[in-house]
Length: 140
Image (cartoon, rainbow, N blue to C red; front, side, top):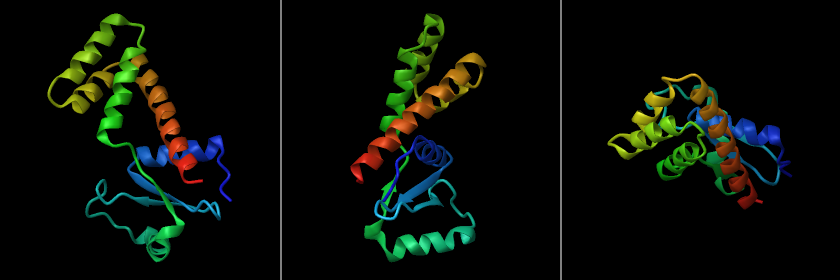
């Protein structure tokens, strides 16, 4: 049986954030992490062959925990902007999100600061953890 702990949720969130796909067997509690081919095109997956085979041989036994799609990721960036106390920086973030290439604009702006960058990483981690928990709850 899968024990949903804060540590497990955080680990899965971190894996998703680094371009991995996580497979969870709710019955056994087994968790497999495999690189997402879309993020690692042309990569060497030899180290994950055994896990890939497990998932391919028993696909109905595993629940896929996927990274947020772009729509949900954008919503997280908007929610981050909404809670900023520095109204000047908040407006700059909203401006970045309202133009062409909002993800690139947002990242460039966030990475040009120190305090807001740290706030963003903390906010994003909590959002990813909520995302993971929702998906794990559905798989029960």
